[in-house]
Image 1: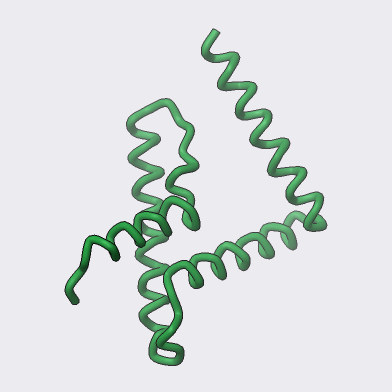
Image 2: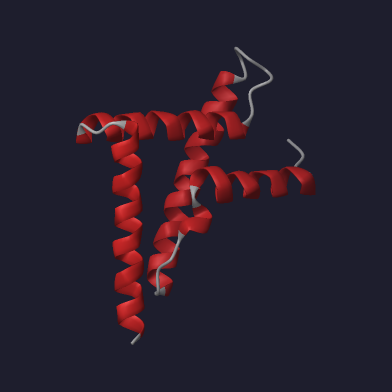
Length: 108
C-alpha cells in the first residue's frame, strides 16, 4: 500500500481529534511517551478494525470507526458508573476542573 502525504495527515488528524493525542496535559517526558504509546495502540486497533470492516463496507473510514469506538466507550463508562448522559458530562467537567486547579497550584 502506497501512503501519500494526504493519508498521513488524515491519520494524524484522526489521532488528534478522535483518539485524544492532543489531550495530553502532563508535565513529564515519560508521561508524554506513555500517552503517545497508548494513542498509537488505539490507532493500531482502529486501523485493524477499519480494514476488517472494509470487507463488508468499502466506504468505511478511520474517523467513523474511531467515532464508533468513542461512543461504545462512553456508553460503557456511563453504564458502569450508573449515570445519565448529562451526569456523565458533569462528572467529566468536574474531573477536568479539579485537574486544572491542581496544575495551577503546582505552578505556584
